[in-house]
Image (cartoon, rainbow over all chains, first blue to last red; front, top):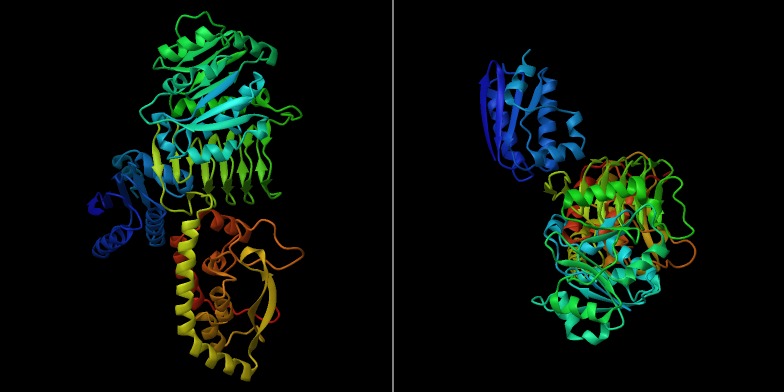
Amino acid sequence: MSVACTKEQGIGIITLSGPLTAATVEAFREQLAAWQAGETNVKNFVFDLSAVDFMDSAGLGSLIAALKRITERGGDMKLACLQKKPRMVFEITRAYKVFEIFDTVEEAVKAAKP
Amino acid sequence: MKAVLYTGGKPSWTGVFGDRAWVLLPVGSRPLLSYWLEFCVDLGITEVQIILGQAAEYVEMFCGNGEKWGLNINYSLIRAEDNPQSYLARDADRWSDGLLYIGGVLFPRRRSGFTLEKLQSLLDGCCVVDHGNRPVFFVSRDRSSIDRFIREETCGSTPYSTAEAAGLDFTCIRDVTHYYRLNMEIVRNEMNRYLSSGYSSRDDASIGYNVITPASVTFTPPLAVGNDCRIGAISTIGPCTVISDHVLIDRQCELSDSIILSDTYVGRNLEIKGKIVAGNRIVDPEDGTCLEIEDPWLVAQTRPRNYMRDFLRAVFGWNFTLLLVVLQFIPFIILYLIIRLLGRGQFVSRRCRGIGGNEIKVLRFVASSPVPSLLLMIFHGISLDRFPQLLRVLSGNLWLCGQVPKAAEGEKMKDTQCYFPAVFSYSDAFIEIDKQMDALYYAHTRSLAADLRILRHALFARLVEVEIISGAA
């Protein structure tokens, strides 16, 4: 699992690659927290999941935890480019009701703008 | 006349469902094979030979000796290099008085005007090929036609009756999408064509036997539920849902436009819409995408009895218990003496059902005050209150991990196949539980890994837990 964090129009773009599972969530959490610590003025985030080919309940839990942290700080979090298999996990666990999911990063960024 | 049913040669599209027997895939509320067997009965055939292939033991377990259908079923295995016709050719005289052969994913779909009288016209001879031009259905009483079918491995040019004339539509299921759509069409409009006499489809719901549902479950027809299923509270089933045999649906689930294959557990609070669930696999029928889930709390394959697995659990449990007893012995003696001297609590004897359903006495710790003290918290936190029960594991009366033991009331339990009374259970590990559902879940998914998981959670949870069983409780 690799996490690439950039800033675009004041919005944090978090690009994840690889499976987001119990084995990789710790690395994801640590990398995200480290970037957030250095970019305290970024409140809104878009998570680009186009390269996440698999996700389990632990991976989903880590995204929900990230959403909780971000919203607690008054920010917003959008998901973009969900692949088929992770999308199925979102569907069966009803997580699609919790997140705003967009087909492209551009659409998500547009929606995330304050 | 004799019937030969070929259950080998696994069709490639059924691979997404794992290693389960493709002839046991449900169509409507029943496995495909049961329609074949009923077809034999409808044609007046009593002698059935089933050629086994993949998942042979499950096919044999399902059919038994055929008594259930009034059939006499025998089994045979063929070599991997043989095809069914070469098997038939080995003893050609055996089929001389008539042969019914079914050997593909063929569903004898009944048309709206179907009658048993019309079906008899098939006996004049009929042959159907699949999409690869391979014969998947053959019936005839004419010896020369049978010989030609066996020898040429094709339908040949013999004049045959047609499926249409018999009120049937032989559907060769070609892929997952076709399989899903066939099921949906049947559950929506055609369930009443396959009802046994005495049954009614007035409410568009077909429910098998031994289906346990709390009053809070909502059924929205049309739907079909197989045998031996349990559906958790506040779940919504339907519309257009097919649930096969031995399925556990945990509480607060919503299922619609879906097929749940046999021996499947569907976890709590899930929403299954437009999917096929086969054990721990979720399949999107529209494009065949298969998601294999490793988390057994979401979806899981329930398993039949496995003696090696239980043996391993027993060996591990006994040795781990011995270790716990050795570690806890001195702390237990010291702390329990202090607790007794201060009058803070004591063990009381309760009768419950142990391994094999035998009545045993188990000591349970009861605190004398509902207010937790540091001493009691330590006693509880390091599980010293379970020390006497651990001794029951060493004497072979309880498992280390399993289900909450049932209270001993009335006669000895009859069915102990799925009963694993234990010192630690899911109720120790997780706060929000449904004891009945968790007991069933454990019985079907038990393994050494599951036991380790319970132990890890239970021992840790008890360390941080402050609630002490009070005398009032």
